[in-house]
Amino acid sequence: DTEVTQTPKHLVMGMTNKKSLKCEQHMGHRAMYWYKQKAKKPPELMFVYSYEKLSINESVPSRFSPECPNSSLLNLHLHALQPEDSALYLCASSQGDRYNEQFFGPGTRLTVL
Amino acid sequence: LAKTTQPISMDSYEGQEVNITCSHNNIATNDYITWYQQFPSQGPRFIIQGYKTKVTNEVASLFIPADRKSSTLSLPRVSLSDTAVYYCLVGDLAYGGSQGNLIFGKGTKLSVKP
Image 1 (cartoon, helix red, strand yellow):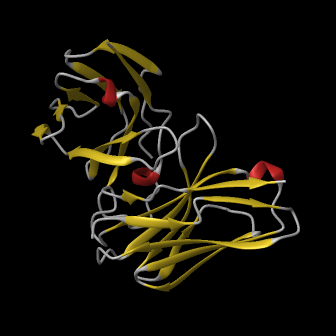
Image 2 (cartoon, one colour; image 1 turned 180 degrees about the horizontal axis):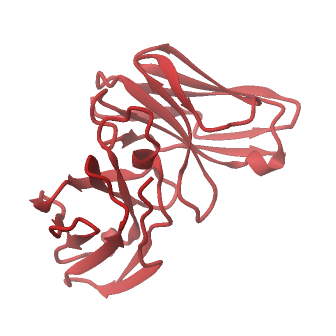
């Protein structure tokens, strides 16, 4: 299995809702990432988990809360988002010692109303 | 933090060889050069990675001169399906707290025409 899967594919939520994005990989990768990508812009790194520990938080607002329950799963909990948070949220994974070679999922298209 | 500079866009025709150059004047000794491809509404896909000289795989070639201040991604005989954005990244293979290897530049939008 060489895939990173993300659910849901699309998500529409109001500013008062709480929702979660899910990411899963079964490649034995020990590093997992969350990126945010706005239209016609490059992906922006949000969080990095290395060996199930949060190693990087790129000054992301607290309304985004990552969680890594085990080495195969990565969640992004969303609460009180703003319309400007609407974007494509990408999950990626890599081997623990090959951070440059990342495998990306198809993303979750998030719309905040 | 090695910053990268790429052309914003390039046009080509089917069957041609395409070369996309990336400048990275501040590349550090431990930095590797990595290229990704991204189609609309999809996640980026790793293409190739190198440190010096030339690297070739089934998809592309990567040429890196001796001073490593630039690199060129070469796509042989492109097809319409190669129309995508191509990103050049430079950074340390071992993350170790460095941000460089996880920062995407603006990318080059390649349009392949029939």
